[in-house]
Image (cartoon, one colour):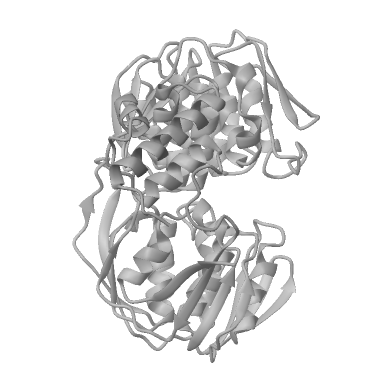
Length: 512
């Protein structure tokens, strides 16, 4: 077969892109927004005057939902892990997924331009962006693909919402707080498994009711109506100190006239990022870092703001765990120690040897960071059980990593996940790799160590943190393991496999 000259190949690919775009009824500008590039760059692609990397071809294929441009296999992603290797060097913590999602929702409050810097390029962020773009928000990535600028139109096209993207992210519930100021009634799609009577949703309804919001769930949609209350002040006592519940209350309070007092508020990392952003918009908020927030709302928020998202403590814990279970000396840079202090205290009690650098501030000017260097350590089980608490307690999302760590420790450790139904069940998959993990009930596991890790083939559990725990255990298991259907990990981590490889792990991505 005759090989096409490069310029001819580029022109043919450009024609395929143009035809697929037109078939989708998209303008060059709309495609550019999906790609996070400029309209002129799309024009160059379609004219065959733009060099195309495999990564860009993949993004084009996804943006156009077209099989005309196919890069590699399209089936599930699997990992082949050769364990028992020491890690070394240093790795930097990336920005917070949970903060990014909250700030994307918060941008709906602002009539001005919002620029978010250091945004995590993960599936959850992409889903929220798809929803925002479908209702008219212009969202543009910079050339490096790290900074995101959002401009919200005066009128949102709520009827045109991308229902499929909305149903694939539970974060859609955080649209309620901003949207109650935009329309007297509106509908939001929600995931079919969601129920207003469940623990995760009902507190949102209680928190938003004082702002005049009433929500009914029927036929896979939230039907929301807003009745102005005329109140000049309101006090909200949250029935649970949840992160997203606190964020939703803050989003509603930011544009509500008068003073809103939120009691039993979460002061976790993503809430602090949201407060700092709202303060840039001109909202007065007292109580940052405490469980009582006093918000003096402003009916109109119109400011061009620039905000850099802080680092992710859960990713930091993931990277620390990778070093601990492999018995490595490793430095985790830019770790938000303010949100890891309890975790580090528990690890010190278990015998982990580590050093902290002098503290320094994150680029948001507020969050305390440090570099954490861990050394190979003989671990012992803690005397008491390990359980999560609202911040400043041990982070619920960091709890699963202690199951992997406890499997390295001498003795018996109780892990009590009282928050989530059934998540503890997924941790019992560690037994496939040689760990002694006994499930006591849907909330508790008993871990006996130290483990003699062995390689195995495991299907990824349908829960983000337990899935990563299985991957980290495979790093410790000598031999070659296979972790199947790992797409869920991309929902919360950016280039995790590549970054682990950079510090010495042997991980190969493959498809059937």
